[in-house]
Structure formats: C-alpha cells, structure tokens
Length: 259
Picture 1 (tube, rainbow, N blue to C red):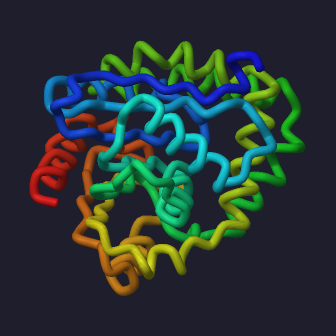
Picture 2 (cartoon, helix red, strand yellow; picture 1 turned 45 degrees about the horizontal axis):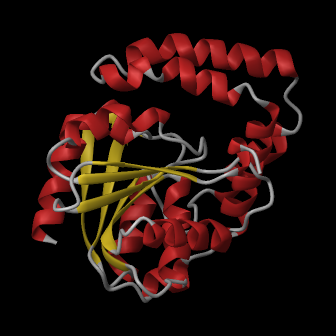
C-alpha cells in the first residue's frame, strides 16, 4: 500500500498535556490547521490525521481506523476536534468506540449533525463530476491567491497553501473528496447526537456559506444532551481554525479546561 492510500498520524507535544485530536474536513489533511496547531503548542498534545486518498471507505471505516491508530500509538483518551466533514467522522467515532480509548469531549469547528442544506451537498457532488480540468485548475489558482488575504492573520497556514493546492491537483485526491461528499449526503447522525452526553461544543465562523450555523446550533441546543455551548467568531469563516487561530485556541482551551 502506498503512502497516498494510508491513514497518517502526527503527534505534537508532551503526553502529559491534555490531548486534542484533529479530524480534518473534506480536504482530508493537516495543511489548513497549521496556525491553530502552532497556537496550541505547549498547551495540548495535538494529534492530527491525514486521511487516505481512497473512494472506498465508509464513515465507520474512518472511525475504526482512526481509533485503532490512536490506541496503537498509546493514545487512550482525549478530546475530538471535528472540522466540517470531520464532524461526521466524530459521530461515527461515538457510535462505534473500540475498547482502550475514552472520548473526553467534542468540539465541532464548522461542523454539523445532519447537513442543514443537504441538496447543496448533492449539488456539489454532482458538479464535481462535471467540472472540466481547466476550470478546476483555475479555481485552485484563484484560491491560492485569495488565501493570501484569507489567512493573513495565520502565517503558518499561509505557508501551507502551496502544499494544499498541490495536493488538490492530484486526480486521486478529487475522487476521495467526491466520496466524502457522498458520505455527507447520505449520513444522518441525529440518533447518535440525541444519545451523546459527553461535553460537546461548537466553534462557528460568522461568514460560513458551506454550513449555515444557526440551524446547527438550534438543533444541538434542543436535541443533544451533551451540548454545552457555541462560540461565534466574527473574523472567521467556515475554516474557523485557519482564519481565527488565536480566538479558536482560547475558546477551545477554556472548554477543555472546564469541560
């Protein structure tokens, strides 16, 4: 099995610190969390994953492989930080926990339960099969330039944008993203959320055209027994960890210390 088909794990920080486990969004790697990771240095043991470029895994597969990797590395407890698509992995994780690992709490960053605008996910999946290659390359070029403005307060993330764009240019990467959109469109973790009693919080960017925050917040408040609160960060967008790393750090630490 080559590296592109493997789940990869990196650990930053001392084992004596509280553990925060980052599960990335659709892009599937750690390129957009660099500044948040740097901000957390010395405060938590930061564990991050890069998903394999496979169009075959189910959400249960993601969760099972991640749990197994954690236990194999001697990581037996910690908080889950689910970013966007990573929130769906969190729900699968909670539904099928393996022996030897304890979830202490959950933070959703631009995350959700059932996507509040499911037709938009299906449209994204439909369009992803029809974009010509030149259009996709142009979109990546535009994003790379826009990122200089978007991540101007997050220099570590800005330095990772070239890697982010290069990874998205690989055809196998696009197939994996398409499959993750399928998983979002068909997944309904609301029964899991209704049974979740561990502390659960939500980080929300003010400008989020991908996951409307209000319906997510209202549903969690009314239906999730473990829901403890949310934080709206004014200068952030959907990628709240990358666009407001310092504010996200302070809030995440406060939740972990009080959770």
